[in-house]
Amino acid sequence: MKILIVGGGGREHALAWKCASDDGAAALYCAPGNAGTAALATNVPLNADDVDGLARWAAEQRPDLTVVGPEAPLCAGLTDRLEAEGLRVFGPTAAAARLEGSKAFAKEIMQAAGTPTAAAQRFTDAGRARQYVRETGAPVVIKADGLAAGKGVIVCDTVEAAEDAVDRVLTERAFGAAGSCLLVEECLTGEEVSILALVDGEHVQLLASSQDHKRVFNNDEGPNTGGMGAYSPAPAAGEALWPVIREQVFDRTLAELKRRGIAYKGVLYAGLMLTADGPKVLEYNCRFGDPETQAILPRVAGGLVPALNACIDGTLDRTPLAWRDEACVCVVMASGGYPGRYRKGCVITGLNEADALEDVVVFHAGTRLQDGDTVTAGGRVLGVTALGAALEDAVRRAYYAISKITFDQAQYRTDIAAKAMPSARREGME
Ligand code: AMP
Ligand code: GLY
Image 1 (cartoon, rainbow, N blue to C red):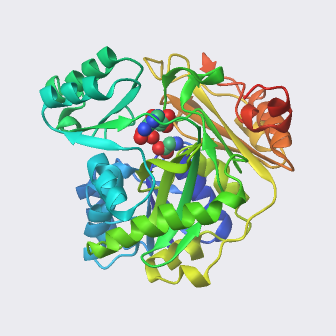
Image 2: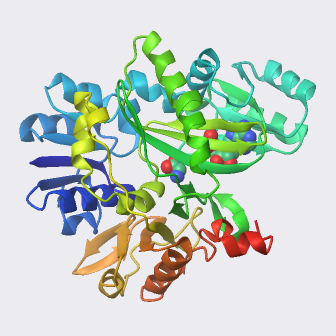
Image 3: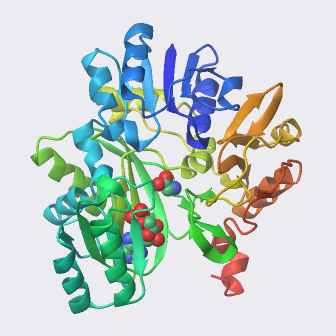
């Protein structure tokens, strides 16, 4: 079997690793991949957002399955293009990917579906948006409508900050076309969890719960990042909540899309706030989370590829995933300075020693091969991932593995999963 994985981050290394362990004989391709995927797959020098180049490559090479990692090619219609070539693709069409590509569209669907979410109003006019902010007061959240690389959400503690945010989005166009409209949204409080589900157009299969750590520093301080670590399961999203999440979030939203003639196939990722009034959706993503995927896939006991194929064929109800009981933790090692400016090209040592540890996998993100060395090539460099009987064990193993790895100015959080530990809860460190 020939499989193309689109993307070059830790999520895509985890997908390639899982596909390789499912079928050792599969011919894997990763576009563009990284130094980690190069050990399992053939890296194809095409960027994930080069939809034309990827469509040409796939039309010639005819992969049996294409798995799309990031949102940009999905929103730009890569799935539609490849399906038009008669190819099999795991990932939603552009029409379905709008759940992530337009926050106003996602909100409209949720409101029509009765999916619990923060109250919000849509604006294209800065004056009207500012007036609304003054009427509703703070705290309040300003969200640019379109894809803004995770930077288009501004949580504002004061009315002044919210008015500034409105101006940045709508007047200064700080997020470009993504800011042609915005949402002014009610600020929710509670614990955040990520619930991802496989969807085949008809059936929904929830994946293990997880939680990521978006701020760069310990105790959730400092600026937002792409994610500094993740763990699974997330005890905050206990199984008692699952029927509620399945029905109110996934079933209602997918039914509303279907009413509009949109069949959703792929992963649907719900970012949820567990509020005092129950779970509410903060955002939808149309893809696997990064770094949640690195903490989820090692817990899948059997094959993943059959379930991905079942999403394409509409047979997900007959293809349940099996799960390991162990917990999994992924700690991201990033370049010093990230998410701001950082150096590239620093030599990474200790990778083999860390990888050789039992139940440890080092997923690469921003890495590349240079003269026989593995060097840093991005902000998030590695996702050091470990399984353990309980979260505590997985955490201990992940940090032990990290102690083997060095590169200049490496930075990582030392509190990944700490707030989920029973001991932390007892000590009131939540
Ligand atoms: P998003 O990209 O929509 O997930 O937003 C990024 C982050 O902003 C989320 O992980 C939350 O921490 C925060 N956020 C988004 N929407 C809200 C909201 N309505 N209330 C409070 N925080 C929010
Ligand atoms: N971990 C957040 C995301 O993938 O969007």
